[in-house]
Image (cartoon, rainbow, N blue to C red; front, side, top):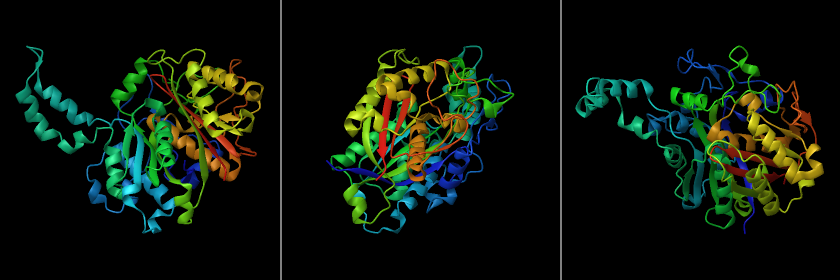
Amino acid sequence: MNRVVITGIGWVTPLGHDIESVWGRLLAGESGIGPTTRFDASTFPTQFSSQVKGYDYKKFVSNPALHEGVGLNSAFALGAASQAWRSAGLDRFDKLDHERLGIYLGSGEGSLDFDNYVAANLGGWDAETRCLDAAKWAKVANVRMSAMREIEQEPNMSLTHLAMEFDAWGPAYNCLTACAASTQAIGEATQILSRGDADAMIAGGAHTMIHPLGVTGFTRLTALSTRNDTPTAASRPFDQTRDGFVLGEGAGMLILETLDHAQARNAPVLAEIVGYGSSADAYRITDIQPEGRGAIASMRQALESADVEPQDVDYISAHGTGTKENDSIETRAVKAVFGDYAKKVPMSSVKSMMGHLIAAAGAMELITCVLALRDQTIPPTINLQSPDPHCDMDYVANQSRKTKVDVALSNSFGFGGQNDTLIIKKM
């Protein structure tokens, strides 16, 4: 089996669009959360989010015309993957076997073109018969709606844009397992490389749900914070006063390679992926199994596959959403896996600063683990002012920490009960 390493990283986030400035802001405990401006959210219970700002994908790609009409998810993916590509030095490598370059993404559904979609539906609605008049609908739709724009809503479009941009002919997959998607994508991409089915993979995730439908769905689930007066303090993982997560957006992308392939081209090796675990709660659609059995199974599988003992883990990147259930159950699960060591291992949630990037969250958080290994520094959990007695571990409250980080574990738990864990180590 091949060893698998990370050679490139890139992201597009609410705190910026490049590795170093965003990492600096994370270590400084800055928040990217503010009032929602993409649509008028003034009538919603939650009027803030963690939006990507000032971003233009055309600055990152080689041929913008190739991606004309690109959807927002794919635009984020292109910027993040382009950074990772250059970080890995692949822009200077001309001997790549493109049949052995693959892609595995955890990419969400594209955001709807709401203005035109609503106009088409209203234009075709017959109030008397309470039916949609197909002829009227088509007439409005033909004027207001673009066929390409509709296609861009498909979850696999980000993969398609990346394949075109980087001429990737190899294995191509996309999964949509909610908040666990990009961690699953990276784990599955690692297995593809490990068994020898590719030499290199672009892996990660991209997502935005900052639109009326996305916000409405999470509002009805009562999953979102409603701290409209203090949005930068709204994401409060592990704090006793937490009242829900903050919706974010963006993309995180990594270049994964077999160690042999990376060494043959003298690539920079940032970390090695040594463990991957995946499980299902088999419990409820939105609720986590109360004892954390799925999270426990995922972490144990990852530790076993990595041949790593719990006391060898120097840092846990928590799923840490800031909901009452998630944070207490994740804490319980970590205690079950790590035993007496649980209160000694630092665990933090960058969602306190970024919000929850849904399908892209896991990839973005794994990148913070890579940087923690590089700089021997752990990012903080901000807004942790009133510790919850049920969350009684070391959450690196409010300030980053210089410490030894040679092995890091990253958790992602998704709606529907999907649980995925990755373990990386310093080379």
